[in-house]
Image 1: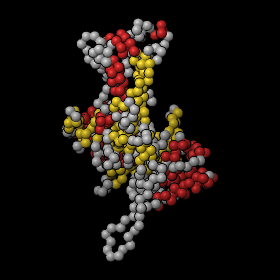
Image 2 (image 1 turned 120 degrees about the horizontal axis):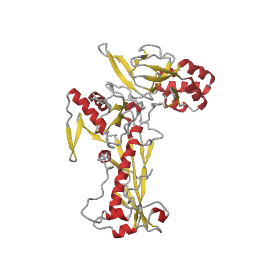
Image 3 (image 1 turned 180 degrees about the horizontal axis):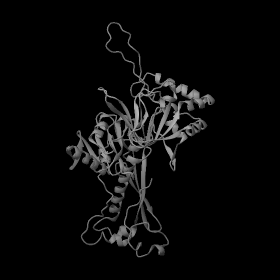
Image 4 (image 1 turned 30 degrees about the vertical axis):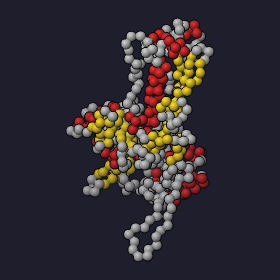
Length: 480
């Protein structure tokens, strides 16, 4: 990735009075006309609108990484798939990408592309209106549903016989996957459309028909059906055999803790740019402000802004992309309510902070106002930060807001000792001016332009899945 070079360009596009056309090349460094603005009259240092508070960089505990990589060791887990499915749309027709069927637990690591292609072709599209029942509790579960678009609710029976919303599912989710491996599977809850929904359904009969002709599929499904018999805890990790409450000479079980054989490694990512300063500018226009220093200061600010953006949005290590799907929640009424944030908090211990786009914070404030609630605020570094249940809600404009005016709210536990989220960097690199950020002199070219390579190394790691939770599809444009 490359962060654009920061610096003003004079209106004539010149260095030393020569225009770009006279020099035969595009301008590469700050022109003298712009440089004079820092050398005359009473003035401020160059200002920059892109600079934000960057609370994520401030609040993350940073771990020193040697060798450019950080390995996250975990207990062995027998979970066999917990992802989301991706679709392609042509007009009003939706199709599932065949390889995406591997996100289903029953098809995890299944390699037969031809069989996956045929399974995808056998999926049929259905539309449901708000309030339509897709599956009834207690009925035979004979088909898998893939939710291409919309929101559905899993409805159970409360302790007093009333309805209770057990879970809210949104785009890319699936339900009824037990139909692929269990001949007598039944629905343990009612599934009802909360909004207009587009789903793809795949019947058990279609799967068994294909399995009768494809031995690889039949064998794979049989092997997967046996996996749940492994002794696991509620998180899917291999159980540690224990005995408690016994008396006398009871036989004490033997056990050991197994580890993942191939733990995930996070490599440090990089953001770089080459800052160019003309030697004439550096020689003649350095009083009272050092031109190179000001150019470098703004470049570093832009680099840090990009670093925070990547920590949020990068598909390899960004928080939004790497949040476990079991820790992704949907708002019950679109707008972010106190109930939604309570649900987000309840999914993990030791919550340290929320991160939300300023528009999401405003939307949450409107919901509090509607209910007559006034969230407390705390002082963090001289800033008044709103809180919910004592957990600060920090603004972060790097969290995207979609064209549909929806965004996400992040909640996390931080720190290695707490098995939370940590930032990764490597200090002590050559020519370092800030932790894990260096500026290297690259020389002076034949056009008398001085070059500096500005580099930042960073990444982030989620130590256990429940360290990070995301409230997705939060509406920020609703006014009541």
